[in-house]
Structures are given as C-alpha cells and as structure tokens.
Image (cartoon, rainbow, N blue to C red; front, side, top):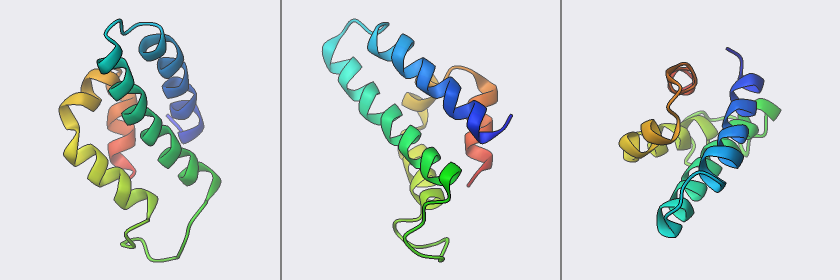
Length: 93
C-alpha cells in the first residue's frame, strides 16, 4: 500500500460510505468531519506540505494524525473498515 492508493480509497469511502451511506444526519456530519481531517492530513504528507521541519511541531501532520487517531480510535476503526488502510495510516506516525 502506498499513500496515494490509501488516499484514493479514503476519498471513495468518503463519497460512497459516508456521504451516501450514513442515514443519520448527525452521525454523517461527524463522520465527514473526522474522515475529512484524515484526508487533509494525509494529503499534506503526500504533497510534502510542512509548516516547519520539526516533526514534533504542534502542526506537524504526523503528530496531528497520531493525536487524531489516539483520540478517535473507535470511530476511525468504524469509518475505515479496511484493515490494510487503517494499519497503513497508523504506520505513518
């Protein structure tokens, strides 16, 4: 798995599974925000967008991903049901 393929999978999940697959408005709204954050952070990694060179910087994409996954593990495991993608993303930080 590479980052580009992972992003492609997540965007397809966002469009199909979240936007069209979740019926409850509040649940869909929360899922869109959470998965959107993951997609944005992974896109920053893919494109090499950094605010600074310090990996422990508060705005480091890897650090933000780790915090996001640590704080939302159960929700993200439901949203990203494909173990390969979930494990791949976790391996990045």
